[in-house]
Length: 390
Image (cartoon, rainbow, N blue to C red; front, side):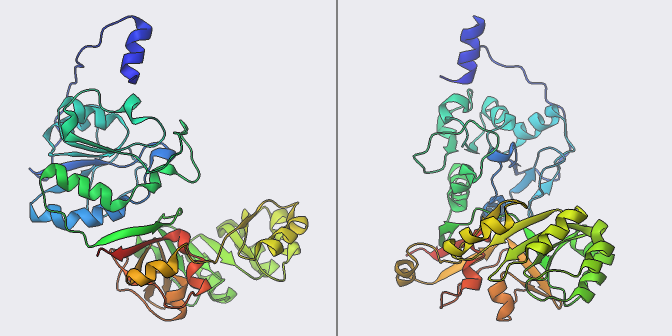
């Protein structure tokens, strides 16, 4: 039963047509789709940039723009006209009414699109689609996508991992093209989605970065790549940083830069240093503990670090069925984690170690290493792996 029907039954009233009062909002385009990609944590899809990257060339050929709506906290997606936080509900209704299609997650603009009988591509995850789908509009003009899983909906605003991230980006893009009557010839299929695909910007302490040119106010300082406290001090003087390290930092360094250190991610290796973590705790510096050790060695750490918090365990193993997939054809990766080093951009630690930079942060594809390099696979949670369609 749809939620509207449940409310009507509980209140003893009939369901009528809603009245929406749209308010004019100026647009830069006469042909556009509206895009609303964020809601509660569990409903916010992490691969929207990949979807938009696939869609943009197709839409641009037809002169169709993408207008991104939402609240002021909405993450900006490159390639869209960003007006999130600038519209009232009435203005959102106006924009949806003038759009060629609405794309987004399960939220109120979807119901506006249904009322105006617009084509809809919407993502559902935390509830049954039948309960919260658009009540108005032609179902033939609506593609409502759920993750392919046997799990029941969580009915929760917070999920970890998020079930919505199980939806493939190319499936969403193809659905948009289908409803708009546009050709779709994307040449790749996704074979793996990392569950931490949130854009991250790292910097190796072998140079000092001017963050104002990057549109951010902080960095993640990778002292596990290059351990250089002198350059780290210079970078912390420029902007606040989170720090990733395998080795303990000098106590005087920590005391001096405590106000500028947002948090420290300490990777525990073969020779753990509990006293380093104890000192961080005493200073009041926020920290996270992580380990890539085999499970038996990881379990042995628990007694040494039990007073400091949970030690998160990560794997350096390749994805399942890698050998079989390689037989089909080359495998490529797209990263959500970029590392700056000596004026170069690297999409992974493997690329950094082998000096394989990319030209820019954007729609890049890199081939995975031939050997099963652990330094590559330890970062797989930040990757989307693709293979050309046969």
